[in-house]
Image (tube, rainbow, N blue to C red):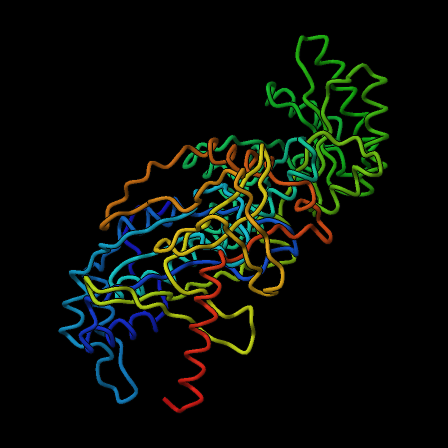
Amino acid sequence: MLDSSLFLLTDLYQLTMAQGYWSQKLVQKEAVFHLFFRKMPFQGGFTVAAGLEEAANWLKNFHATEDDIAYLSTLKGASGSPLFSKDFLSYLATLRFTGNIDAVPEGTIVFPQQPLLRVEAPLIQAQLIETALLNLINFPTLIATKAARMHLAAQGEPLLEFGLRRAQGINGGLTATRSAYIGGCEATSNVLAGKLLGIPVRGTHGHSWVMAFDNELASFEAYAEAMPDNILFLVDTYDSLQGVEHAIAIAKRLRDKGRKLIGIRLDSGDLAHLSIQSRMLLDAAGFKDAVIVASNELDEVLISELKRQGAKINVWGIGTNLVTGGNQPALDGVYKLSALRDPGEPWEDKIKLSEQLIKMTNPGILQIRRYKSGEGNIADALYDIRTPPKEPSVIVDPFDPTRLTHVHKSWSFEDLLVPIFRQGKCIYTFPKLPEVRQTTFSNLSHFSVGIKRFYNPHIYTSGLESSLYYKKVDLIKRIREQVSSGA
């Protein structure tokens, strides 16, 4: 989807800082940044990482075109003079990404404060890629998480993504479809996504088809004739249960000709009541294999409630509340500097302080270690790769340092960030989308049911390895002493 140069997919302040670094001769200064989010989306207990492949595709094409440079040369400062110098623009025209990136694979379950992605690169490069990386990872992660919640609510029944007409623009629609598939949707109505991404496509007819005929029965008969291998009728244009009866009447004629009714779709009304009544009608007529598809502003909570009420729905069509994120329009992903050095010199840890504890960053070059016992995940620890955890290892809750988790020597572990780019070259082989989708299911299966609750989920243990925690505390003290002394 992003196979051309989009160098100017950035905020202006990234470019003004870049000129500042360039003018201060900081071009060779090396930096480490981490991309992470602070709060769990949807007040849930887990998040599904997504967007990495598109971010990598963008980064492969990271360069300024002649048109990009020509545009930047037209920008003016407050005095009316050029905002960017000719020499800086000449430098920018030759710039390519030469750094390293490590990231968690798409479909991995992640938690707040954990880096989804780590960048180690010259400072000016690491700064210029910030906005695009956040844009390309935040939204997909949000939608993949929403889809996974809906998949859990449907308890294994198929989810169809029907959200293109409500999505945020063309690329928003494509990104939402891809992310929804990663999170658990089985197919989409988005035909362009089917072509570009290989996602299965599904769909039948709309209300306008029924209204274009003299009556509903005639419309169903005509549709069955036009689409003999895709016979699924939308029954709620006038009266849903009467629509089911009309569908049955046509299905009986089809059965005599050796053709099969796939099912019906309900798109309004009391879906629990209507699906139960529809099932009774279909079964009584001998169409026990016909599916009942439901749509109409569904989300994970409503799906769960419909199932609790005994709804006889087999397939769930999800639109607006999935592709827009529903009640949460954005993931609060951020991208923060954590280490800096001159080439060949030791790294200097960096930290952002704040009056809000949640906005304080973690210093160092971070990795996520996931501890396991048997088939289940027990806890995650952030650690600095320069000082790997040693036995006996302790995980500290950064928001309540009295809460400690002692790592048992019998636990196995896995480090989640894997190499994606080395010296500017992508070295990672991206899996096919069905494999990514399966990664999501596999990851979720290794966590307790508690984190999958929609209300008051269990809080999974995720903190700082003790040496990183104490290094962070010492760095905070040192900086605050400098601030209080006026340094």
